[in-house]
Amino acid sequence: MSTDISSITTEGITMRYMKFGAGPRTMVILPGLAVKSVLLSADAIANQYKSVTEDFTVYLFDRREALPDNYTIEQMAEDTVKVMKALGLSGVYLFGASQGGMMSLVIAARYPELVSKLVAGSTCARFDDSNSALSEWVTLAEEGRGEDLCLGFASKIYPASIAEATQDFFADTGRSVTEEEFARFVVFAKATDGFDITPELKNIECPVLVLGAEDDLVLGGQASRDIYEALEPQGKAELYMYDGYGHAAFDTAPDYLARMCAFFLA
Image 1 (tube, rainbow, N blue to C red):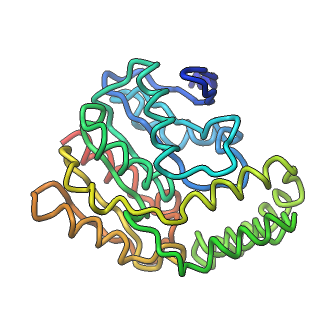
Image 2 (cartoon, rainbow, N blue to C red):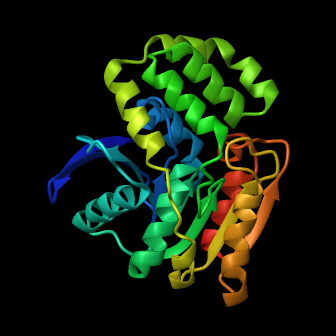
Image 3 (tube, rainbow, N blue to C red):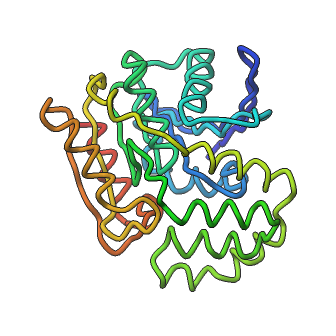
């Protein structure tokens, strides 16, 4: 399968993205917080989503290149909107995972014309500042402890069996983290501070599928329920909760992609 990684500059920002598939509908994927760019795994991602390429042309956006010192989730969303508009994308089928899900809620609420349907995976509409996982990760990144950061990251987002099985991989990854990657990670992690799009959820016009995880050690399962409960009275949302697959159920649950596509194509 042909996987193109491109870079676009518009309105003062530069952003890299990958594109694959040739379907008539457009799917946009906004990934979550990561120590290294997910575009380094472009071929693996394209292979993971190969079953949708007859129905969708898929775009996955990275975060912008040059970062401001203080960067919010809302600003991340606005930058992504600039790029989507520059590429002529509208009426997309939007999937946001974790921090990408926070961004997707902002986009759907503020730019309803851009989104036909939304899947919000393992995410929240309001970030709880008492959450300990992100603050711990920020400390490890600021101290340049890449191995501890990547192993700690894996232990929170994956079930214990997967975290243990991938321990060597994440330890190796941690030893290769650069100073620039540490700095970017800290900016991205701190972007969640004070995030609260709850008052704007009523502005979302498209159907929304909320996919959460009961055993989510990063945001907690209630965060997904809160999104659903805010949207459900307006008949806009469906909710499905996984159990046993962890925060990263979008990577670990075997039926996740099929469930998401069934919603998009219904």
